[in-house]
Length: 388
Ligand code: SF4
Picture 1: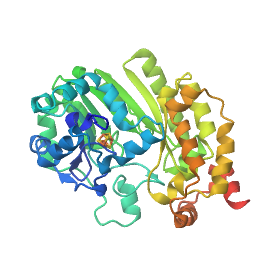
Picture 2: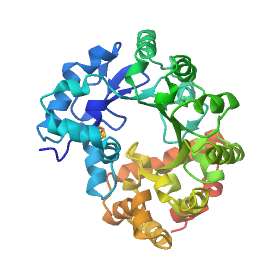
Picture 3: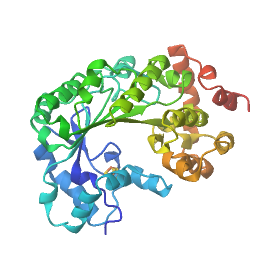
């Protein structure tokens, strides 16, 4: 009955920049459920929207909106669902053995918050929804998206609910509300009971933030870095590798002095960086002292033209050759997600031929607009594409 059960509808509230709420960042309502707007946490948590998701899960049904998790599991990867089921194992077991007792999940315990789309970068795979700078670039008349004042107030009032708070963006380390929220939790004297998770592009670490996070029970930084040096600067437009390396050094020192401050890295694997995985693993395996559980290769699902599913067969074969020369053991390969990437590439299934043409077109346009060169960012990809 509980084969596809996920702990998150029973424990987590995920708030998006437009004040829509859902179960988690991977929950894709486009598949079957309409997004629900939220102004009051309690009303949303007890809503028929949330209860219908819980009921479906408790009755053992698959939910189409969760297909990204099921797909990852089919490829042998640890999905978001499995990760959190493991993290909240005792709560998971309690819910499974008390399915008719909703008081167990009367309030959310984990908050995933995208308070706004304020960002200092314009990443190639990103969209106006997550970066106000991209919104400006495409002449969006209302570039800034942020949660409503009502919800901001309610989140301040309901801090007591949460044991873990995950801040995402945009870039939460420059988002005013996210920073105020951190200070509010410290002032309310709850910070020592809360685990903080900050997903950041690692370009904006300030002394003030470092001082604040050390007041929490723990703080984990998820570092969104998609390549080494010039490639990261190319994909994550506006970033400086020099600054990122300086911040990596600061975080390294910090976690040596304060063990409850930790970090891990996540690479959004897409066409642009598909030839640079070996270099990435080499760099971060040194940084994390060969702990591959701290490196996550996360395959981009969309937009389709950037997804590695759209690569033509001859490129997939070349990438597989490159990946076969990576010298890590089977368990580490599974932990970081290298295994999954190899399986996807070996399928040779092309989702849409036109998508790859769109990739070549948009790469060229962005290169011109931003005065960047793919040849410099990823010479291997450039030669694979243009010197067949
Ligand atoms: S199964 Fe996956 S997509 Fe669905 S709620 Fe759980 S973590 Fe989110």
